[in-house]
Image (cartoon, rainbow, N blue to C red; front, side, top):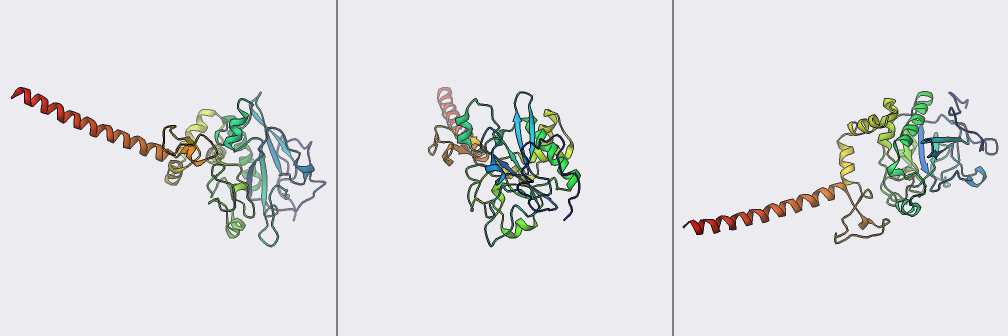
Length: 292
């Protein structure tokens, strides 16, 4: 298959090029698979045997992503497991991108003030640069600026039965953007709760300013998005006085969904209203008795 369109992402370094050592298969890529490296430096990728097509590494001093390219855009890379006898993964029309950082809340907490990217809380400049790549892939290779999957928070995103892992049939017909957590025959849960809606909205609008990215990503939500956000675990910390609270961020009891928080507040407000109504009734009775 002849490669079509530009194969090198403008500005990307090829200092760690593995396409010569591992030639790969030519494809017509229409899927972007996002990963997180779970580290703070550019991985060695076992000499290239486990490398993606691209790695995006943050430069916190200048607030931008520095891109490294390891294979051509339309050539298979090597960051996915491909089990014998099942569907193809690395060679099924996918371009793979690793983001240097973590999706694990425990790792995020452990790293503390060490500069790093945490996938659920990407800064606006990282969203901007990821969106620029997504737009380039769409313009030059026709990769849809869509995502037909739910990005689930880690560690719930790990495992074969994580609730978002695609079947072989869905995977073979999928186009657009997904994560390692969605690919069949794989167990990894990265990139966790990647803000894919914000990234794709910015790519669609060509937005680069911080304020506009925030506004359009909210305006772009549909009813299903809002339902998902309301029920999403692993984002909002549970009240420490909750009966099932667990101080360990890796445990489900550490988090409540937004919907659970709202329901809890509603219940407390209604309980207070009942108590106030009862107090008002008693006060009225006392006043009536004095007047008589």
